[in-house]
Image (cartoon, rainbow, N blue to C red):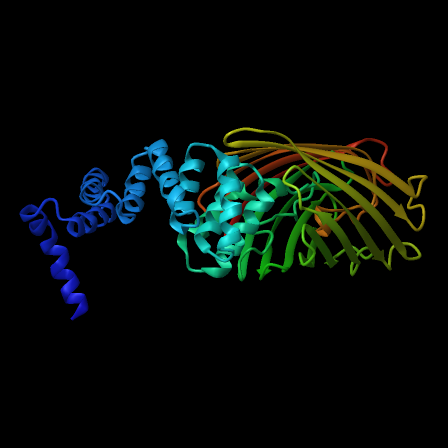
Length: 459
C-alpha cells in the first residue's frame, strides 16, 4: 500500500503544484523528482520556489546544490554550501557537496582540507571517503587515492561509482612495471595490482614470435602464455605465469620449453610490497631441463612521486657442467618526472649484478648491467621506451618470470611498447624489442627481434 500511495503521489504532484504553485512541500518534492529525471532546469526552479516559500529552511538549499552541480554552476553551489555551514558547522551533506563543488573547480587543496575535517566527524562515511579518493586522484597522489577508494569499497562493495574509480588505469600510473627488454614472459593485468578489493583476478594472455639474426642454430621462435594476478583482500596477492616457447633450429630438432612461475605478494606493512616466489622450467635441452629458481624482494610504494626496492634471485642448473648456480641482485628506483592534467611521465631504473658459480666460457663470473625505462601515461594510453646496456649471462628478468638459460653473453637491448585501455576491465599491449648477444663459441654478435601482443582482462 505504501508503494501504491507513493506512485499516486508521483503522478499527482504536478497537478497539485499547478493548483498551489507556492506550496513549500510540493515544490521541494518536485525539485527532487525533476533532478532524478535529469530535468535540472526544472529542478532548479522548483527548489528555488521552495526556498522562496520558506527562506530559512535547510532542505531546499541542500537540494538546490545538486542541480547547480549538474549544470556546472560550481561557484553558486560552493557559495550555497558555505552558507549552510556557517549556520550548521558539522552538517554532513553540506561538507560533502561543498567538497564536490571545490574539486570540480580544481580547488583541490581546499577540498582536501575540508574533507580531512569532515572525516574527523564522520570517519567511516563512504561518500566522504570516495570524494577524498577523487580529490587525491586529481592531485596525482595515487597511493592516497587508492587508500581512500579502497576504504570506501570495503564499506560499500556494490557501489558502481567506487568500482569505476578503482578500475581507472590512471589510478595505478605510479606503479609502472620495469619490464626488461626481451622478457616475453612478463605480463601484468590491468589495474588492481595492490589487491584493493576483497578478491580480484587479472589475467593477461599473450602471443608473439622471435626472429633471430646471426645465430649459429636458432632461426625463429613462437611463444605464448598466460599470467594471472589474484588479489585477496588489501594485503595479499598471488601471481602465476605459464610461458611456452618453440624455437626452430637449423639442422636440429625444434626446442620446446615450458616455464612456470608463482609468487606471493604481501602489503601488510603500509607503503611496502614484499614478494617471494619460485620458477621452474622443462625443455629438451639436457643442460637446463629441470632448472629451478627462487626469488624475494621488497619495494617501497608509499609515495606518489617515487618508489625504490631490491630483488634477489637464485637459480640452479644441476646438469650444466658440474652444477651451475647463479646469484643475482637487482636494485631499482622509479620517480615521476612530470605531470599534467591528464598525463604522467615516469622513469624507472634497474641495476643487475649476476654472479655464476663457475666460468661458463666467457672469461668472467660477474656480470653488471643497467636498464632504463621511460613511460608516458596519457588518458587511456601508455607509451614506453626502454633499453639496457652492460653484460648479462644466465640472468633472471621479468621479476623472475623469464630465465635466460642458454650459455649466451647479452650486451645490449632496447625496445618500445604501446598500451591502450579498451575499457575499465581490459587493455591491449603491443611490444617490440631487440636484444644483442654472443653465443658460447660464436665469433660474431647475434640478435633477437621480439614482437608480442598482450590482452589483459580484469574479472
